Length: 171
Image 1 (cartoon, rainbow, N blue to C red):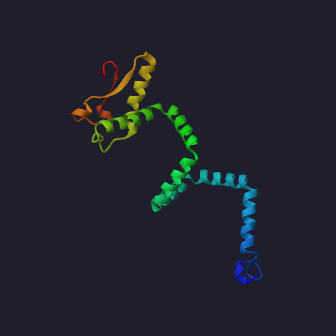
Image 2 (cartoon, rainbow, N blue to C red):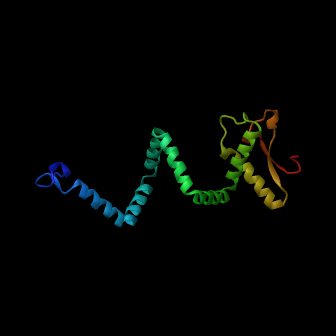
Image 3 (cartoon, helix red, strand yellow):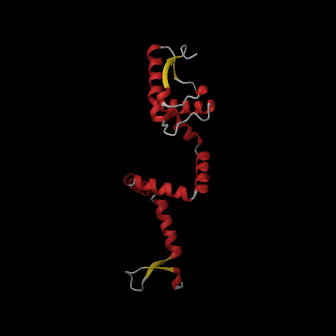
């Protein structure tokens, strides 16, 4: 085989790898296929040790390749729809106040598109939804999160403008 078919190796006498590039690639692929569990375990350990670095790298890649990132995300979702829906359901059951606050935000935006202040955070509204849920469970009487100043009258969807009321008082 011609010399160009071999990769360089500083430690060998002739300065070349013992196998050509094509054979080396085939050997590496076979090893990878024979050791997928080992490779996955090693990758998992690296990921746990480098979560922040991985997050930065992933964000940089997504920003540099927005179209490809969307394509991959859509492809993954279409291949894993049931898995994602099951994961979402588990998360929603474990985080009812967060889910309710996100739903409340969506409902408020549909009712009044300009009702969201610049400093809004879901976390600031979650205690109201948690309290409404808790009171409903404790008393058996439905409780709602209500806007003190109505969205129709220019009120904002913000923690300072929220209160928990019984469903009958919120009519």
